[in-house]
Length: 366
Image (cartoon, helix red, strand yellow):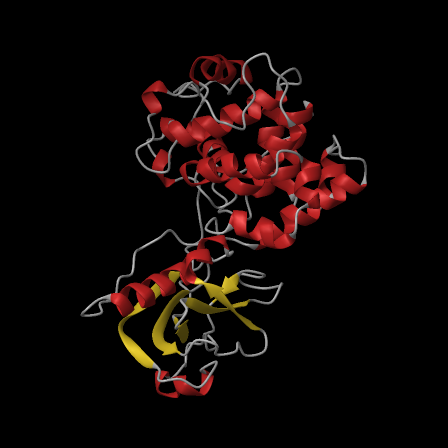
């Protein structure tokens, strides 16, 4: 049996020129890429879908049209604009990176090494920006690229151990005259044709040289070590509503899970949490009542269940140290992560209903 031909960049680029996706951060044909847009989109797209990122990207450009505008913004404004995208350390690093670029003259470094020195920019992001924004010969390897190249070469080593080999194969394919287009072409191929399940091999520009397809095993690549499921954690959340309509909020520590985001007061989140001890964690004296049902949320490393306790307090009740009263109509201006939005919806919707019900909407993991 004849071995398949080797993959060629020109075959992929010919396909890309006909089928490239029209994305708001992607330069039009013949236009130079904007490093700010490329960087912003790459940070937003980490662990997030294009559909989820589109509206956030548009709003970010309206509020922060340039890297200097983003650098000069208060951290609260950045976190509020980011709220709902998840992985909130990205927003903190985004702001820190903007400040670093602004302090050095307002222009991004144009090499992988220079980009890697900036906050929040790792191996993939530096390669993507260097290739797309500056035409550098770089291998931008994300999940889509890992899948395409693993199938193309039928790489048996499981991810993550196979990543150096995948990067080496990818770099060898990068054409020096169109490195940015090549990076985006492989991403598009993985997102639209070489998908995790039921890849459309019959219309793939790399169908012939793909070793996994030739063996009829394309869906078995990339090889992966099974993930261990995180241990369920539990806790209690306390929603206090003042008579003037204000809600008691706090701010999480700047580092760690959901760092710097707004929250309603909660207990610790632990696998051995005992709901019977909830009142020990109440933020103030009030007639707390536990609402029916629980709020469930899934983080990257663990699922969470929160019992929700609700209390109405008199007008003029002072906020405990470290907490604040926020008018209910201003909650949309707070940097509330999805889990806290669920808690507030559960409590405030339930509190105004004649027969309170748990109303928990599923959202994607953050």
